[in-house]
Image (cartoon, rainbow, N blue to C red; front, side, top):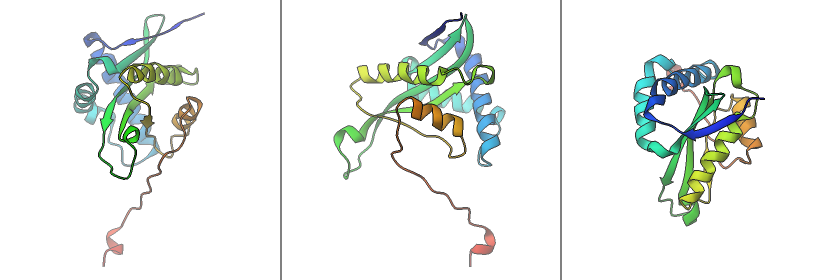
Length: 164
């Protein structure tokens, strides 16, 4: 039986992470028209994500040495005067990607759990993650991993004919 291994990302993972960012972006692009094609954003997004997360908050999942996905996260500090201190300092999971052939094997919750342990060691007591409303598989994975809805963002497209 194949064994899932989760480890810190290394600089040698850069091309695999880039391919995963493209796959994730293209998947979300099929779900919502606001997503640009993965090839257009991959380099800039990957650079931003790695800089934001730092080298130890990007985790890679492998099965038998084969790259199957990644997760990235970091600590966010907000200054919302209406919220508790632990709500203003939280772990944010920016990305969870499992490549298509490996989906449905509970790899995403394993990546989330590993990232949670990392962020918990930094004193975080809350985690947050976002998903497109249309991304039912991601939302199911997050619920399976113990997340509950915290806030809901609504969107309305305003057409030029509506502007008067």
